[in-house]
Amino acid sequence: MKILIIGGNGTIGSKVSNHFSKNNEVIIAGRTSGDIKVDIADSKSIKSMFDKTGLVDAVICIAGEAKWAPFNDLTEDDYYIGLKSKLMGQVNLVRIGQHYLNSNGSITLSTGILADDPVMKTTSAAMVNGGIHSFAQAAALEIPIGTRLNVVSLGMVEDAYEKYKDYFPGHNPVPMKKVINAYVRSVEGKTNGSIIKYYE
Amino acid sequence: MKILIIGGNGTIGSKVSNHFSKNNEVIIAGRTSGDIKVDIADSKSIKSMFDKTGLVDAVICIAGEAKWAPFNDLTEDDYYIGLKSKLMGQVNLVRIGQHYLNSNGSITLSTGILADDPVMKTTSAAMVNGGIHSFAQAAALEIPIGTRLNVVSLGMVEDAYEKYKDYFPGHNPVPMKKVINAYVRSVEGKTNGSIIKYYE
Image (cartoon, rainbow over all chains, first blue to last red; front, side):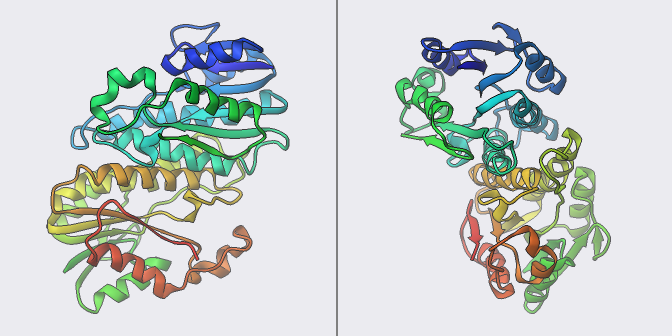
């Protein structure tokens, strides 16, 4: 398979890219590194990326940002960071990317446990994740027949535990093997419109 | 109680307003009618509304719009109609409104079944509803102690059945008595961070 992984050099992305590289042609896209530069907050940049890749069998997005801050510190504009990047960035990836999929192709988006079980300082990040869950279920009803759209929603992953553990009191890290398997289920399975949740 | 109902003259709002008016002081706000004019897509308008009401015991929002259209007809800008109105409108209502609540006061937002079980043409509307569910759970962790924030998420309501039934094949209308009770549970109960779902 020809697999495009946006954010393929990140904490999660590098493990997922390494796995799929064993038996597939992997193209890594990223804002600052990778085979193709892309800023998913800019739909023109997304279009330009797909014009470079041509048709692919799978698109995996493990990218997109949102501002973390106490509720009373987040300004209205702060919310738009997440709305433009992690939310509309992933929406535009589906809007545009659906036309660059081979038959049986799939798109996999990424969210996280905050959608269902938020912690302090995540009103923006949680909102964006929850929006993507509902969007994906709705869009899966309308994408071209034979293509698929799923979301991987993970708890705090093992490789990010040391950096983020203080934000997630009592949360259990998700082993990287399970992280990889979540993406494998979406790409190699037949499910459409699923939110694949590994929350430990 | 002094209850502010935004959208209190709408299909759902009028029934909810009638109910609470029996034993409470109800102030109705709306874009085109009501005691106070407000456009929730404009945070200045929200601030101006609360400056007129002063402190209240409950805020109920049954307002906000999002564009319904086939996935391939929705432009990037079309999504921002819902993001600015039903999503950020309700976020801003909590950001600003939390400071206008009496002790034990509550805010109740409104979404709908599309968040969990979307139908065709609702990628934007579903996304906004799902975003509000996750936002409210996150914000409920950080709003002032003693205040509460909940969401009412309904299936297609009885009074809108004739108008919308073709969009919701096989869905069962939610009786208006249950609709009213969902809001009563949020306002008169003690729950915080709940998504009150009546999907029939």
